[in-house]
Image 1: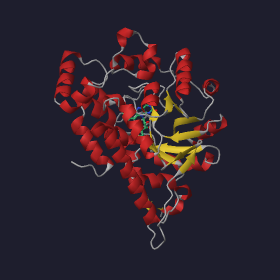
Image 2: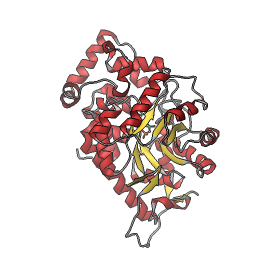
Image 3: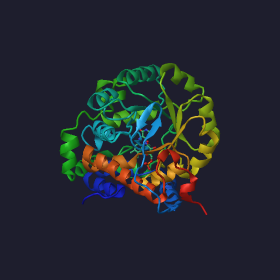
Image 4: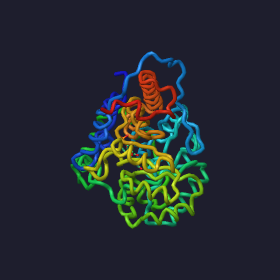
Length: 381
Ligand SMILES: Cc1cc2nc3c(=O)[nH]c(=O)nc-3n(C[C@H](O)[C@H](O)[C@H](O)COP(=O)(O)O)c2cc1C
C-alpha cells in the first residue's frame, strides 16, 4: 500500500511492527476517552472556505525561539523510537531536519542525545524529572554540550497513566513464560522488523539515561522499571528554578491544559509551553488539547510561545490549531507510525503530506501567511 495520509502510516505500522510496539504507540490510558477527543474535537471544527483570492504565494515559515521553521510543525518527543526502526531517533531527526522542522528527543529515546546530534543535528531535548538530581544535572550538561537549542520539560507524567493495552500485550508487567513465548512469536512473525531492529538496530537501551544504570540491567524493560521507580512526583513550580540553574537556553513546559498552570509557566519565565495531555496517555477524561488551546492562548499568548500537540492527523488539523492560537503544532503518533512503517523515508513523506495538506487548506481558506492565521479562518457558528 502507498501511504496517502497519516492514517495510512498507522495501518502500515500495524502490519510491520510487533504487536507490543504497535499497541504501545497507538494506545492511550484507561478507556482512551481523551485520546479519542483529541482527534474528534479537531475533526468537529469547520474551516471557513473562501474563494477567488490570489493565493499564488504562501508563506508557511515561522520564527520561534530563535529558529526559523519551514512550516509550523515539529516532532513531539516519543520514547523508544529506536525500537520502531533501526536507530529510529536518528532517522526521524534526519527527516525532520530535511523538512526544516524541529525534532524533539525524548529522555527515554533509544539513541542518546550525542548519537542524534552526531548522526543528524542537535535535537530539542525533552526532560523528565527523575529523583536523582545529580544525574539530571549531568544529563542537562550533556544536552547543552551536544548543542541542543531548546529544553522541553514534560510536566504531565509524575506517574504513568494506566495503559491497559500495554498490560494486555505484555509490554508492561510480568507476563511469565507464556508472555515471553508470545513476544518471541510476535517478533518472528514480523521478519522485516526483526531484521531491521532486532538484528541490526542494537544496542536496545535507552541511550541518554544508560549511564545511570549498571551494566547488568541494560535491557529496555529494566530501564522502564528503573524509570517507573525514579519519576519524581515531588516536583513543583519551584523546581523550575533548579532547571534554570542548569539550563541557560529556552525552556518549554510541555503538558499543560489549564489556564492557571499556563499563567504559572509564564510567571516562572518559561519561553514556551505545549498545550498537551500527552496524547491521551495520562489522565483519561481530561479535555482535548485543541479545546484547551484557545483559552490558554488568550490568557498568556502575549507572554510566551504557545504550541500544542494531541490528535494532529493532517495539515487541515495544523491550520485549525494555528487558527485557535498555536504558533506551531507537534505530532507524536504521526511520526512514530511513519517511522515504524518505513524509517526516515516514510517520516519524510509523512511530513511532505502534512505540508501539502496545509498548503491546500491555506489556499482554500484564503490564508497566505501562517503567522496571520486566526479565528476568522474558522466557521464557528
Ligand atoms: C509512543 C509514545 C511515546 C511517547 N513518549 C513521550 C516521551 O518520552 N516524552 C514526552 O514528553 N511525551 C511522550 N509522548 C507524548 C507525545 O510527546 C505527544 O504529547 C503526543 O504523542 C501527542 O499526541 P498525538 O500522538 O496524538 O500527536 C509519547 C507519545 C507516544 C504516542
